[in-house]
Length: 243
Image (tube, rainbow, N blue to C red; front, side, top):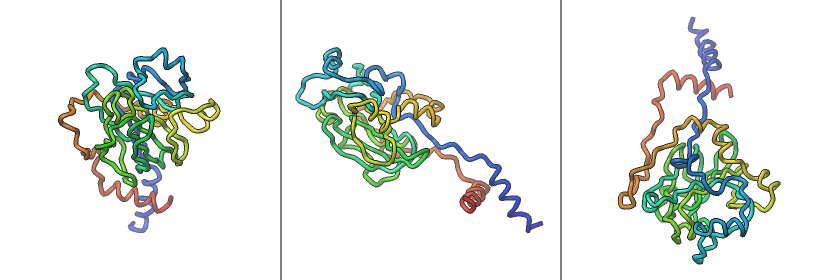
């Protein structure tokens, strides 16, 4: 009887479904607030002229041209100006870049090994209180930044929005625009398609946070993972043994 126990457990291991990788949205109102620059939008002088109020000539290098390699999630309503907007890692990974970059202001980049090798970019964030550092592991949904104040030096004079991109492969690339469509398609995923493909559409778009500028959100997020049972540990052990 006991000799057949390992075979029985192995059968259970192979039959048990593998849990789906957790992927979530990087910011509240992610889809509904994409009202200006999407993935593939051609940005030229005429584009800037049509949106002159959102691209002021205020001494910052925010008038880039090319084909937009990401999506912009806008927070330009008056009620959003002083409100804290947390930015969260879309899935688990390792922080590989935290710095100030011309055109972005604060920029955080996370490298992910699963569901495929990519890096995720989070631009126009408030660098001075980023709660993560290079080399740190982050989990899906963990707060990694807060959007910066509109038209301020901390986001290179830009309007208040999240620049969110998914770069193909594990390499470091901070480009916000590409000059050819061939280069765009070779180097960048459409973030919306990538999130949908990996299940983020099942995640509810979070409601706006009530956190104000005077009471910053804690850097440490409570864990939401379910407790691991002894049976789960046995299943994981057998998966690792035969993988």
